[in-house]
Length: 391
Image (cartoon, rainbow, N blue to C red):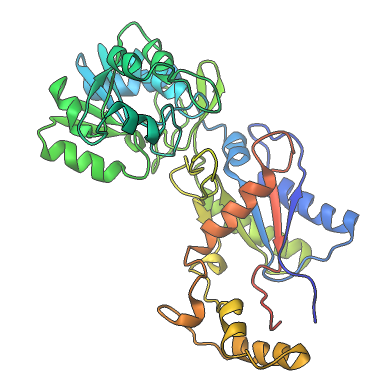
């Protein structure tokens, strides 16, 4: 029996700067790590590179003034509503600052008790205690605080109602979960939600909004020399400085294809490559769903397409192999895996496995391995992921 299963390794890299050849740097780091620590590279290994260093190497940045100019060109001298933003200094504060600069007045509609990705400032139990119906009840910032008192974020300690309202002298905050509530204040809207953005935009237009712009439509082209992302706009951006953001990277497919080719040139191995951002998982204590990026992986090589097709070892062991043990059970299990159907959807043998995209699973593994702090491993090498018990 081969006792080694999936391995996820963080690979350290130098500090990446604008203009760096990230394909060469990544390939060199992976090959050097392999040589230094004595593990061989294999066909079907996966090299994952965080979106942050790719965007940095591209110089894909924008200032709040450039965001403001794009917003101003879209709305002119109108009062604008901003609905359903996430609560984050890193992810949204600079976007908000730019939007506020670009409009005459900004009405910010926050959801409650938490934002789209689970950042919470009141609990569901508090809603019950206060007799609040989150599906219908609407609050001003003052009314909300009078009802609930301390509304600081559970982990960061930030009062996002106050923090967002003080972004500009032209900002006002309301709290409501129906995005169409904003239309009582203005017919011009920016919907700031991430994964539900298409649904929210359609609902607003159907309810009578004159103009609705999603975050993926802001900086989808360069403004005064800014960075941009033609597909995601300012979605997936992060705070860079006190006056700028780093945008989600561009040309990701070109990068992963070039990296795979370079690794084959250096090693002779067919190594799959991907760009990853946030993992797609939820914290069981804080309730925060990690995925604040528009996607878990914006680009990957062809070998990473699709979903796993796996049987549930526990189910098979407890049923088909219930009367076997030792080497006989191992041999029987290997045979079942080798001869499994090509598509196990709706098959009891696969119940309890994870029917998610391979890139979402690998991206989550990579994100957990690299972390978001000071580990210094923006490159992740995943090995044996495509091997199973029969191999």
